[in-house]
Length: 273
Image 1 (tube, rainbow, N blue to C red):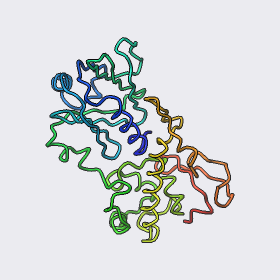
Image 2: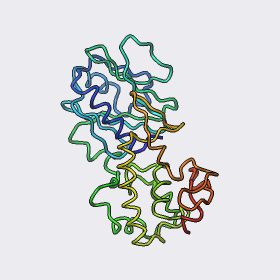
Image 3: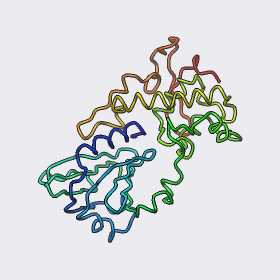
């Protein structure tokens, strides 16, 4: 699944390739992917251009002259740039056709991705945006903020950190890595996290995401490259997908357990319960 670093990489790449191209046509092949009305989605984009691309958590926000197009890649969504005469792929569900006869195509094997065209003034009131928590690197993401969110939560800290209303953009890969950075057993109740540990979560989230963005994100089986970009952060992973390998800090074998149905990789020696 693309997480904050991968979505930011997609954003930066698309900004170099599609901004200010006038949209000539919009094709929707899988209507359930579009949350706004069919009558508005295509017609209201034709003749417009994407003048900027923003991001909030894992949401891409394509800005036109008068609207925002929200796009969430979910599990396996990807954007591709192709010539207009290239054959439609089996899993292509939306295509934006530009006047220069290039196209931006959205591909999603599992059809979980979503798009929504909204008025600009409605952005902060749109539920998917309004409920987003603070992002790694935000000056307001402090240990006190986290401790306030964690209090009374008996769920495992791993599960709580996947809650996008607390820290926006972190997914399974980076939560596993942040837990290792902070030396926290992912099974511990969130309410037991100390102030020092919360400070490590804040610092680890910021440092890991900055480095991941710099390296183009993480390319693994569940999220491979598109737009000609291949991430390299998988070379820096300490625990994720390292089951049975020696810990880089102590040599203990990395374990893999399920927490809330998610594969959770950790070092049983470095990450204390």
